[in-house]
Image (cartoon, rainbow, N blue to C red; front, side, top):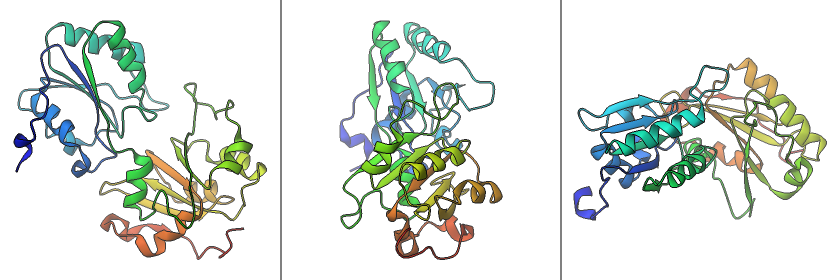
Length: 274
């Protein structure tokens, strides 16, 4: 059986599919995302979509960059939504391709609402988010029966670029054994201080995963107290996810991805975690 035998839906003219491209590795695309790439005549893509994924687009498809990166000139969200509506109303087969999962810190919900309110038919195609896929490629299970029955995803900055002030950091620190922080490199120092002040051990293991699942992947292992200084010293680059918790220790046995051959690893952490 091949993908054509799966009886997948068609991306019809006038429709928009909001699809996740995964964290980078093209092998992590879903069958529906591949279907959309093969059928779309307009692909509106984010800055974090891997070039190898875009190379899978249909011949002659219009590739439209709509990337938003912190600190750099970027399209306004309202303009992106208006562009999607206009393309669909022109009868185009539109694929809105977003890094990771479109509805996990990806503004997919905002774009879906804009389409719904404009009367544009759409489909949401989930993707593998960096908070699970990136961890797996770093050899860190997001959950493990021996360590955590909860997992918390956190954004490292607000829409205005600040540390989220509307979060109950004390409750987060107490309530979840494993924390995964997206877009947190810029504010890593203040976030670490907030968590330590809220009760997380200063020597708790932390991993910073840069360019997850791609040939450029790098992983830094350190502790909560040292993570900001060590990430800066190692010149860790965005996009990156930060994972905090005992599950980081599994990496010593589970690191499998070839790109990790030159990963930065600090000396062994204390057995008790703090």
